[in-house]
Length: 154
Length: 154
Image (cartoon, rainbow over the protein chains, first blue to last red):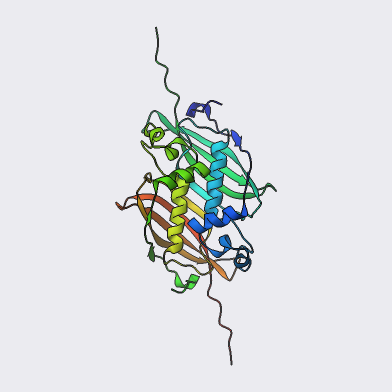
């Protein structure tokens, strides 16, 4: 599929991804490197915490969600480049064996005031588990290239 | 150091971390798993992109920042549990060889209305490189346990 320029995006468009399985061992190794807290590292230690059992680090969920978004058909020209997020929520934990997917909806499309070759799209991306429960919601602003003006050939 | 209960936090408190080196190969392997885009995977391919050279995935920066925060002296009782973020920005790219650290400032402290044993602190966490330039800014809401009421012993 061809990459989308700013002019190809419109409010209300939605994009979906494939699925990705969350492996118990990867939850633990990700946490050991980036988020070494008992509820992300060990089933027994996790039992008496707020999570009541082993849960993926939110940053692991965020990273997997990014992978799903990159592999989805949203495909902005110039790549997926986040200028910043207005919101990032983890409404429920991700558990070993979950299968995640993302759904994105375009909320805003606007040209950049300072850079005539660029624009921004505001996108809500919801990460869902196999029961269609939201495990992450982000509202992000992505930089998108504008369609190059065709050079006139006489 | 003892973990901090909600009652131990106050607006204006700041916490600092140690430093963590960002390795070029880890930038690429993180990206290959979670954010496989040219500007995060390959120096040559990155040169003609918006980043003008290899840059870490923002989610890699976020994960490293979490590790720095976990290892810092903020230490909320019950662990660092994010209820959600009001803001997440990456003001400049993280490059191979950067050394990152975090600084956190408590912006708000409030008891939970629905759960008498819990509260929330709002924390701005800035990730800085070796030149003291901000590479990530988050404003997050962390769940923190309240200090248990001592049982009276006669």
